[in-house]
Image (cartoon, rainbow, N blue to C red):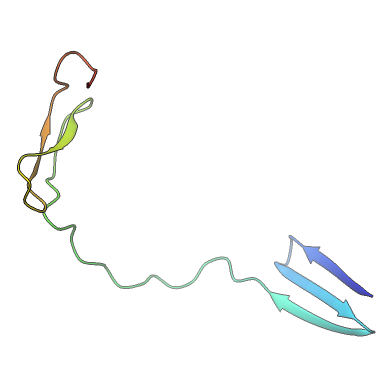
Length: 74
């Protein structure tokens, strides 16, 4: 029979099977990884309520715009 005991205090899981126990420690936070590349062409800025739209069919050709007709799109 297999039994599992989870301890939220010590972030461990103990699995016991056939009289033998294995303790697994959960790591909740690791070191900071390297910074990623900047988003390709995603414009900065924009005001609250603005919408990001494509200006042309070219990749990353986008801009912020206020809602087109008071908040709805068709």
